[in-house]
Image (cartoon, rainbow, N blue to C red; front, side, top):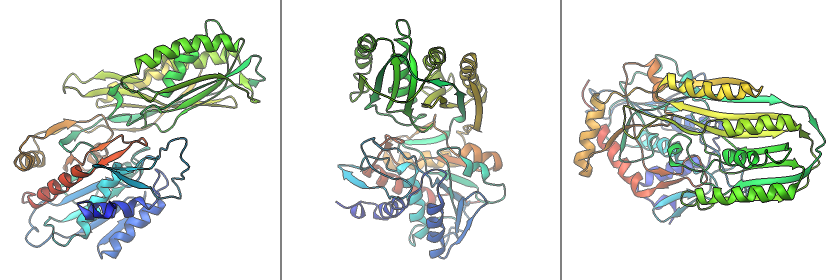
Length: 480
């Protein structure tokens, strides 16, 4: 079945058009032009602000002029992850999609349903002629995935809407009313290199699930950086390890799925035997949650230089010490992760070390508590640490008028109560709310699985449910 035949056809049509346009974070020029052209072709007032956010305004339909005005908001960029065996260029190619039962997925890459389905839904409302709605402002932000610079750059006074509906949640039975803030923690150091004295060994970890470093952080998934750190640490007692290179993980907001380290040791065979004993334990630990995990440890060759044994030990001890995963559960909201860290990327090449982390928390003080712990560990090892890209969380307002309306509509429509929750992902609502404090905000969306990984997939029946729910919300927005 072609995507154009799936209901609601208007959403999947627009999603297909959107996914034909390359849109990596920080390289959104093509998709900005696409959305701007879309609005202008509809004859709607369309502007692009200083940072690249696109705002399209549509007047209320007949009889809805006295209702509160709405901002429909989604982000244009997408996480670009692919399997190592897939040849794909996110900067020039459109996403290749396929249908698998009740799911739409991509062929070996991220799908871009996060937040492309939200964008496509807003496009569908804008071009509709038979859907009742109040006055609308469609806000398409840029760079949500790698810094939220679009939301940060949105100036006060650009929007007049009284209610913001953010379409960037991934469970169709949830109404999100709060989210975590975040800060990037970057660890760097430069080391002198020399010809390695030992035998070369390559350690590779692959086949992990990966996933969203906020929404999935509590699920116990493997992290290739942490597993490599464990394997390297296991050899320190009996071996003088020289690190030649490490290439593991990728984006800050994705749990690392694969990585490799090349090292030199005095006795390669002895190191491999010790490491394989730990490998057996690791495979047993992750058997239920990471059925595809693979760990390869073998004698190799390399003409590259290594950093010294003393510097290598500092790097390995740091990898073993950095906190990864849940740091604290919320004492106030059941089952909500309050604070966490994702050790996202470890790169050592030519003596240049870089370790990327994304620290999240719904409480600003605990966010910095985690970040400062990482900083303390790294500085003890003589490394440099920089905090950047900090953004605030979004404080819940469970009694707001729009939340009560959505709860009522959902319960009557689907004969069950929705889950009104706060999430451990970073949503733009907190940032936008700082400049628009009087605006009521809610986030919701269709069910998406495996976001930020090549396993990302969107549920077809859920998209139908979401579309019907959104239309009913717009038709029942209260009067001013």
